[in-house]
Image (cartoon, rainbow, N blue to C red; front, side, top):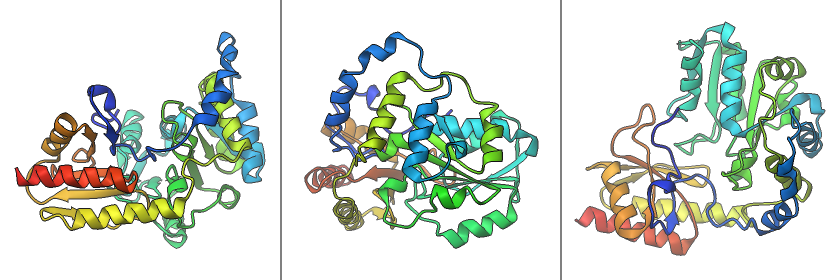
Length: 326
Protein backbone atom coordinates (compact mmCIF):
# COMPACT_ATOMS: atom_id res chain seq x y z
CA UNK A 1 0.00 0.00 0.00
CA UNK A 2 1.26 3.45 -0.90
CA UNK A 3 2.83 5.43 1.93
CA UNK A 4 2.51 9.15 1.35
CA UNK A 5 -0.29 9.79 -1.13
CA UNK A 6 -2.26 12.79 -2.27
CA UNK A 7 -5.13 14.31 -0.31
CA UNK A 8 -3.60 13.46 3.09
CA UNK A 9 -5.49 16.40 4.52
CA UNK A 10 -6.33 14.33 7.60
CA UNK A 11 -2.75 14.90 8.80
CA UNK A 12 -3.27 18.65 9.02
CA UNK A 13 -5.76 20.85 10.80
CA UNK A 14 -5.59 24.11 8.92
CA UNK A 15 -5.76 23.34 5.19
CA UNK A 16 -7.71 25.95 3.20
CA UNK A 17 -6.64 25.08 -0.33
CA UNK A 18 -6.06 21.50 -1.43
CA UNK A 19 -3.93 21.03 -4.55
CA UNK A 20 -2.70 17.57 -3.52
CA UNK A 21 -5.47 15.49 -5.06
CA UNK A 22 -5.95 15.10 -8.82
CA UNK A 23 -9.66 15.77 -8.39
CA UNK A 24 -11.24 19.17 -9.14
CA UNK A 25 -11.48 20.79 -5.68
CA UNK A 26 -14.33 23.17 -6.53
CA UNK A 27 -16.87 20.60 -7.74
CA UNK A 28 -20.47 21.27 -6.68
CA UNK A 29 -21.83 17.96 -5.39
CA UNK A 30 -24.84 19.59 -3.73
CA UNK A 31 -27.41 17.67 -5.82
CA UNK A 32 -25.78 14.36 -4.89
CA UNK A 33 -25.75 15.27 -1.21
CA UNK A 34 -29.44 16.12 -1.29
CA UNK A 35 -30.21 12.88 -3.08
CA UNK A 36 -28.25 10.77 -0.57
CA UNK A 37 -30.01 12.43 2.36
CA UNK A 38 -33.20 10.83 1.09
CA UNK A 39 -31.51 7.42 0.81
CA UNK A 40 -29.91 7.16 4.25
CA UNK A 41 -32.29 4.41 5.33
CA UNK A 42 -30.57 2.09 2.87
CA UNK A 43 -27.71 1.68 5.35
CA UNK A 44 -30.05 -0.40 7.53
CA UNK A 45 -29.84 -3.32 5.13
CA UNK A 46 -27.08 -5.10 3.24
CA UNK A 47 -26.27 -3.74 -0.21
CA UNK A 48 -26.46 -5.86 -3.35
CA UNK A 49 -23.64 -8.41 -3.07
CA UNK A 50 -22.53 -7.76 -6.65
CA UNK A 51 -23.73 -4.17 -7.28
CA UNK A 52 -25.68 -5.48 -10.26
CA UNK A 53 -27.98 -2.46 -10.55
CA UNK A 54 -24.96 -0.15 -10.74
CA UNK A 55 -23.32 -2.36 -13.37
CA UNK A 56 -26.53 -2.16 -15.41
CA UNK A 57 -26.52 1.64 -15.12
CA UNK A 58 -22.87 1.80 -16.19
CA UNK A 59 -23.56 -0.49 -19.14
CA UNK A 60 -26.51 1.62 -20.27
CA UNK A 61 -24.42 4.78 -19.96
CA UNK A 62 -21.77 3.36 -22.28
CA UNK A 63 -24.11 1.43 -24.56
CA UNK A 64 -22.55 -1.96 -23.80
CA UNK A 65 -23.85 -5.21 -22.25
CA UNK A 66 -23.76 -5.45 -18.45
CA UNK A 67 -21.72 -8.64 -18.87
CA UNK A 68 -18.79 -6.43 -19.89
CA UNK A 69 -18.83 -4.44 -16.64
CA UNK A 70 -17.58 -5.23 -13.14
CA UNK A 71 -18.22 -2.64 -10.41
CA UNK A 72 -15.48 -2.17 -7.81
CA UNK A 73 -14.85 -0.13 -4.68
CA UNK A 74 -12.82 2.46 -6.56
CA UNK A 75 -10.03 1.94 -9.07
CA UNK A 76 -7.72 0.62 -6.35
CA UNK A 77 -9.85 -2.46 -5.69
CA UNK A 78 -9.92 -3.03 -9.45
CA UNK A 79 -6.11 -3.00 -9.56
CA UNK A 80 -5.68 -5.59 -6.82
CA UNK A 81 -8.51 -7.74 -8.19
CA UNK A 82 -6.91 -7.87 -11.64
CA UNK A 83 -3.50 -8.75 -10.18
CA UNK A 84 -5.04 -11.54 -8.12
CA UNK A 85 -7.14 -13.03 -10.91
CA UNK A 86 -4.30 -13.03 -13.48
CA UNK A 87 -1.51 -14.08 -11.10
CA UNK A 88 -0.81 -17.31 -13.00
CA UNK A 89 0.82 -15.17 -15.72
CA UNK A 90 3.61 -14.36 -13.23
CA UNK A 91 5.32 -11.35 -14.87
CA UNK A 92 4.42 -7.68 -15.14
CA UNK A 93 5.69 -4.29 -16.28
CA UNK A 94 4.53 -0.71 -15.69
CA UNK A 95 4.78 2.42 -17.79
CA UNK A 96 6.71 4.45 -15.17
CA UNK A 97 6.45 6.80 -13.40
CA UNK A 98 2.96 5.81 -12.36
CA UNK A 99 0.65 5.07 -9.45
CA UNK A 100 2.54 2.68 -7.17
CA UNK A 101 -0.45 0.39 -6.58
CA UNK A 102 0.12 -1.38 -9.91
CA UNK A 103 3.49 -2.61 -8.76
CA UNK A 104 2.37 -3.17 -5.16
CA UNK A 105 -0.57 -5.31 -6.28
CA UNK A 106 1.65 -7.46 -8.49
CA UNK A 107 4.26 -7.86 -5.77
CA UNK A 108 1.53 -8.96 -3.36
CA UNK A 109 0.63 -11.83 -5.67
CA UNK A 110 4.24 -12.86 -6.30
CA UNK A 111 4.77 -11.53 -9.82
CA UNK A 112 8.26 -10.72 -10.99
CA UNK A 113 8.98 -7.63 -13.03
CA UNK A 114 10.06 -8.05 -16.64
CA UNK A 115 10.28 -5.58 -19.50
CA UNK A 116 8.14 -7.96 -21.59
CA UNK A 117 5.82 -8.82 -18.71
CA UNK A 118 2.59 -10.65 -19.41
CA UNK A 119 0.69 -7.85 -17.65
CA UNK A 120 1.41 -4.31 -18.82
CA UNK A 121 -0.01 -1.45 -16.72
CA UNK A 122 -0.59 2.00 -18.19
CA UNK A 123 -2.24 5.03 -16.58
CA UNK A 124 -3.86 7.22 -19.22
CA UNK A 125 -3.78 10.18 -18.66
CA UNK A 126 -0.80 9.30 -16.54
CA UNK A 127 -0.57 10.03 -12.84
CA UNK A 128 1.68 11.82 -11.91
CA UNK A 129 3.12 13.14 -15.20
CA UNK A 130 -0.04 14.34 -16.98
CA UNK A 131 1.19 12.59 -20.13
CA UNK A 132 -1.35 11.09 -22.54
CA UNK A 133 -0.74 7.92 -24.54
CA UNK A 134 -2.57 7.89 -27.91
CA UNK A 135 -4.40 4.84 -29.21
CA UNK A 136 -1.61 3.68 -31.58
CA UNK A 137 0.74 3.46 -28.58
CA UNK A 138 -1.80 1.36 -26.65
CA UNK A 139 -2.36 -0.92 -29.64
CA UNK A 140 1.38 -1.42 -29.99
CA UNK A 141 1.52 -2.56 -26.36
CA UNK A 142 -1.36 -4.94 -27.03
CA UNK A 143 0.81 -6.69 -29.60
CA UNK A 144 3.67 -7.15 -27.13
CA UNK A 145 1.93 -8.22 -23.92
CA UNK A 146 -0.55 -10.92 -22.91
CA UNK A 147 -2.75 -8.36 -21.17
CA UNK A 148 -2.67 -4.57 -21.19
CA UNK A 149 -4.42 -2.86 -18.29
CA UNK A 150 -5.21 0.78 -19.00
CA UNK A 151 -6.20 2.80 -15.95
CA UNK A 152 -8.43 5.56 -17.34
CA UNK A 153 -9.28 7.06 -13.97
CA UNK A 154 -8.55 10.58 -15.21
CA UNK A 155 -10.41 10.27 -18.51
CA UNK A 156 -12.88 12.91 -17.29
CA UNK A 157 -10.08 15.48 -16.98
CA UNK A 158 -8.70 15.54 -20.51
CA UNK A 159 -9.82 16.53 -23.98
CA UNK A 160 -7.66 13.85 -25.56
CA UNK A 161 -9.54 10.94 -27.07
CA UNK A 162 -9.50 7.86 -24.85
CA UNK A 163 -10.59 4.45 -26.06
CA UNK A 164 -14.24 3.86 -25.15
CA UNK A 165 -15.51 0.76 -23.32
CA UNK A 166 -17.45 -0.18 -26.45
CA UNK A 167 -14.17 -0.25 -28.38
CA UNK A 168 -12.14 -1.84 -25.62
CA UNK A 169 -14.49 -4.78 -25.00
CA UNK A 170 -13.80 -6.00 -28.54
CA UNK A 171 -10.08 -6.38 -27.84
CA UNK A 172 -9.47 -9.74 -26.13
CA UNK A 173 -6.40 -8.72 -24.11
CA UNK A 174 -7.39 -5.18 -23.08
CA UNK A 175 -8.69 -4.35 -19.59
CA UNK A 176 -9.89 -0.82 -18.84
CA UNK A 177 -10.23 0.66 -15.35
CA UNK A 178 -12.57 3.58 -14.72
CA UNK A 179 -13.22 5.74 -11.65
CA UNK A 180 -16.51 7.40 -10.83
CA UNK A 181 -14.70 8.57 -7.70
CA UNK A 182 -12.46 10.83 -9.78
CA UNK A 183 -14.80 11.66 -12.65
CA UNK A 184 -17.43 12.98 -10.25
CA UNK A 185 -15.08 14.29 -7.53
CA UNK A 186 -16.34 12.01 -4.74
CA UNK A 187 -13.14 10.43 -3.33
CA UNK A 188 -14.85 9.60 -0.04
CA UNK A 189 -17.21 7.24 -1.89
CA UNK A 190 -15.17 4.45 -3.43
CA UNK A 191 -16.83 3.75 -6.80
CA UNK A 192 -15.05 2.36 -9.83
CA UNK A 193 -15.48 -0.28 -12.49
CA UNK A 194 -13.70 -2.48 -14.99
CA UNK A 195 -14.71 -2.95 -18.61
CA UNK A 196 -13.37 -5.77 -20.78
CA UNK A 197 -14.52 -8.69 -22.90
CA UNK A 198 -16.94 -11.11 -21.30
CA UNK A 199 -14.34 -13.82 -20.69
CA UNK A 200 -12.09 -11.50 -18.67
CA UNK A 201 -15.01 -10.08 -16.67
CA UNK A 202 -16.19 -13.60 -15.79
CA UNK A 203 -12.70 -14.50 -14.62
CA UNK A 204 -12.41 -11.36 -12.50
CA UNK A 205 -15.89 -11.80 -11.05
CA UNK A 206 -14.81 -15.15 -9.65
CA UNK A 207 -12.37 -13.30 -7.37
CA UNK A 208 -14.58 -10.32 -6.48
CA UNK A 209 -15.60 -9.86 -2.85
CA UNK A 210 -19.33 -9.79 -2.07
CA UNK A 211 -20.75 -6.51 -0.70
CA UNK A 212 -17.67 -4.65 -1.87
CA UNK A 213 -19.64 -1.46 -2.57
CA UNK A 214 -21.81 0.12 0.10
CA UNK A 215 -25.46 0.90 -0.52
CA UNK A 216 -24.73 4.63 -0.56
CA UNK A 217 -21.94 4.16 -3.09
CA UNK A 218 -24.24 2.17 -5.37
CA UNK A 219 -27.03 4.74 -5.10
CA UNK A 220 -24.60 7.60 -5.70
CA UNK A 221 -23.18 5.97 -8.82
CA UNK A 222 -26.61 5.38 -10.32
CA UNK A 223 -27.73 8.93 -9.56
CA UNK A 224 -24.66 10.51 -11.14
CA UNK A 225 -24.88 8.41 -14.29
CA UNK A 226 -28.64 8.84 -14.68
CA UNK A 227 -28.43 12.63 -14.34
CA UNK A 228 -25.29 12.96 -16.47
CA UNK A 229 -23.69 14.91 -13.62
CA UNK A 230 -20.44 16.77 -14.33
CA UNK A 231 -17.91 17.67 -11.64
CA UNK A 232 -16.39 20.35 -13.87
CA UNK A 233 -18.96 22.66 -15.43
CA UNK A 234 -16.66 23.84 -18.22
CA UNK A 235 -13.82 21.39 -18.84
CA UNK A 236 -12.29 23.50 -21.62
CA UNK A 237 -11.92 26.52 -19.33
CA UNK A 238 -10.70 24.38 -16.43
CA UNK A 239 -7.94 22.89 -18.58
CA UNK A 240 -7.00 26.36 -19.83
CA UNK A 241 -6.77 27.38 -16.18
CA UNK A 242 -4.46 24.42 -15.56
CA UNK A 243 -2.25 25.55 -18.42
CA UNK A 244 -2.11 29.06 -16.98
CA UNK A 245 -1.00 27.54 -13.69
CA UNK A 246 1.71 25.55 -15.46
CA UNK A 247 3.02 28.65 -17.20
CA UNK A 248 3.07 30.54 -13.89
CA UNK A 249 4.95 27.71 -12.22
CA UNK A 250 7.46 27.57 -15.07
CA UNK A 251 8.06 31.30 -14.70
CA UNK A 252 9.28 30.84 -11.12
CA UNK A 253 13.05 30.64 -10.98
CA UNK A 254 13.98 27.28 -9.50
CA UNK A 255 10.85 25.41 -10.68
CA UNK A 256 10.49 23.08 -13.64
CA UNK A 257 6.87 22.29 -14.62
CA UNK A 258 6.22 19.51 -17.13
CA UNK A 259 3.69 19.81 -19.99
CA UNK A 260 0.37 18.17 -19.20
CA UNK A 261 -2.72 16.94 -21.03
CA UNK A 262 -4.91 17.01 -17.94
CA UNK A 263 -5.65 19.08 -14.83
CA UNK A 264 -2.57 18.23 -12.75
CA UNK A 265 1.05 19.20 -13.20
CA UNK A 266 4.26 17.46 -12.22
CA UNK A 267 6.91 19.91 -11.02
CA UNK A 268 10.50 19.72 -9.82
CA UNK A 269 12.41 21.92 -7.44
CA UNK A 270 15.83 22.48 -8.98
CA UNK A 271 17.17 22.82 -5.43
CA UNK A 272 15.69 21.61 -2.16
CA UNK A 273 13.15 18.96 -1.19
CA UNK A 274 9.50 18.75 -2.07
CA UNK A 275 8.80 17.50 1.44
CA UNK A 276 10.10 20.80 2.88
CA UNK A 277 7.98 22.79 0.43
CA UNK A 278 4.92 20.74 1.35
CA UNK A 279 5.40 21.29 5.09
CA UNK A 280 5.98 25.03 4.62
CA UNK A 281 2.86 25.50 2.53
CA UNK A 282 0.72 23.35 4.83
CA UNK A 283 1.81 24.88 8.11
CA UNK A 284 2.40 28.49 7.05
CA UNK A 285 -0.18 28.97 4.31
CA UNK A 286 -2.85 26.29 4.79
CA UNK A 287 -2.09 24.98 1.30
CA UNK A 288 -1.63 21.28 0.55
CA UNK A 289 0.41 19.86 -2.35
CA UNK A 290 1.51 16.33 -3.26
CA UNK A 291 5.09 15.38 -2.47
CA UNK A 292 5.75 13.18 -5.51
CA UNK A 293 9.20 11.95 -4.50
CA UNK A 294 7.87 8.47 -3.69
CA UNK A 295 6.81 7.75 -7.27
CA UNK A 296 9.26 5.32 -8.82
CA UNK A 297 11.55 7.20 -11.19
CA UNK A 298 11.08 10.55 -9.46
CA UNK A 299 13.28 12.27 -6.89
CA UNK A 300 13.07 14.29 -3.69
CA UNK A 301 12.49 17.55 -5.56
CA UNK A 302 9.35 16.40 -7.39
CA UNK A 303 5.87 17.56 -6.39
CA UNK A 304 2.47 17.52 -8.07
CA UNK A 305 -0.37 20.01 -7.99
CA UNK A 306 -3.86 19.93 -9.46
CA UNK A 307 -5.35 23.17 -10.71
CA UNK A 308 -8.13 24.92 -8.83
CA UNK A 309 -9.34 28.31 -10.10
CA UNK A 310 -7.19 31.32 -10.99
CA UNK A 311 -7.60 32.95 -7.56
CA UNK A 312 -6.58 29.83 -5.64
CA UNK A 313 -3.79 29.12 -8.10
CA UNK A 314 -2.37 32.59 -7.52
CA UNK A 315 -2.14 31.86 -3.79
CA UNK A 316 -0.22 28.69 -4.58
CA UNK A 317 2.22 30.58 -6.79
CA UNK A 318 2.76 33.21 -4.08
CA UNK A 319 3.38 30.53 -1.47
CA UNK A 320 5.94 28.66 -3.57
CA UNK A 321 7.68 31.90 -4.47
CA UNK A 322 7.93 32.84 -0.80
CA UNK A 323 9.37 29.42 0.09
CA UNK A 324 12.06 29.73 -2.57
CA UNK A 325 13.00 33.25 -1.47
CA UNK A 326 13.47 32.01 2.09
